[in-house]
Amino acid sequence: MTAERGGFAALDSCVHCGFCLQACPTFLATGDEADGPRGRIELMRGLERGTLTAHDPTVTTHLDRCLGCRGCEPVCPSGVGYGQGLEAARERLAAARGVSPLTRAALAVLTTAGPGRMVYALARALRATGLPALLAGWSRPRFALGMLAATKPQGGKGRQGAATGGGAPGRPLPPTAALLFRGCVMDGLFSHVHDATVRTLAVNGYAAAEVPGQVCCGALHAHAGLTEEAHALARANIAAFGDGDAPIVVNSAGCGAQLKAYGSRAFAARVRDVTELLATAGPRPGAALKGRVAYDPPCHLLHAQRIADPPFRVLAAIPDLEVVTLADAAQCCGGAGMYTLVEPRLSRAVLAPKIETLRAAAPDLVATGNPGCVMQIGAGLRAAGLAIPAVHPVELLDASYRRAGFYA
Ligand code: SF4
Ligand code: SF4
Image (cartoon, rainbow, N blue to C red; front, top):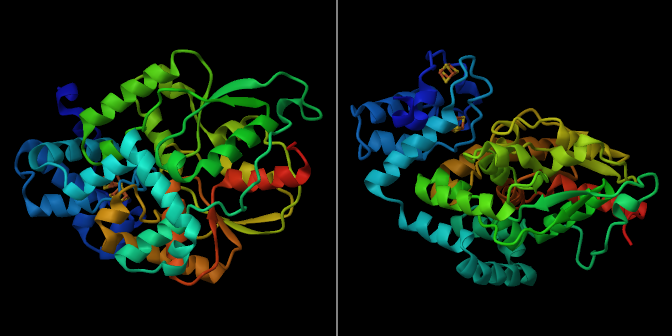
């Protein structure tokens, strides 16, 4: 029975208490019960029972408006598996009404190797002109340009160099093998974060190796209801990473959450966010960096993977860096994969309070460990006229290690 019902069964424990409402960014933005978890659970139950159809505009509107941020899960006293239920509902919606041409096009462009290579190369070329940063703003096309501008390495170019690694003073042991998960958006637009990941891991005794044959994690497909395609990508990744026991290191919270949700428990048990791995026995302190950084936890790190402390431990390894935690930091930024493209109005409404909090706090930087969050928050800050770059936490640790002389 449960197997037939799939993820819908995870909704059964909902007792309608409403504790989740204030943790839901879309409910806070619209004030509509149907835009909150409790209302959506009723819609999903109706969809499962057949009392509501996949073509009912109430169902489609309010389920499409869900960010999938899972901010409703940790606050639920009944342990409702909202994310599993949503995935089952979205699979049913996608089977009944198909997937929009915009979503299909974005998936093809962002997550498949051939078209992706070309599009990411063009995007990097456009980014290098500096025009996206100049033209960034709130309209749909200008926000997209701001997102692209936010992917630019903040530390400048030509900063490669090998870490002295496990052989650094005081750490004579041979390095531990780890396998780098590259992803698609991360690899196309954030290769500097991959470089920083490899270098900072090396300083902490890990040798991160490349894994041929790996593919997109499938998170964007699963969120769109394309479960079969997501499963096919999962099978390809499980085959590519093999059945050894080396940790699989991920620096994108969305990818990490998806990889940990693969059906293979042995595979999922090996997946580690880069901050998790760095915090296992450290990380080693670097040189001082002066400034104030606001840490913004990605939903798929904090809510989906329940990783709260390791990013703070990474930032705490940087002397003199002041880490500020903002009141609404745990609220979704509104990026949510392709949500920012397909639901732009509500996405910006969810982002707005975070930008205002950042305006008031005026940090020098925002640190967040997910490409979508870097792009969404970075674009919002730029559109709001705030010169506050958004970076991945390992970029800051990397800069600190460089200053400390850890790199050849
Ligand atoms: S999902 Fe959890 S917190 Fe929300 S109404 Fe149901 S039982 Fe209460
Ligand atoms: S996943 Fe996020 S947007 Fe969706 S109901 Fe839960 S808290 Fe609200």
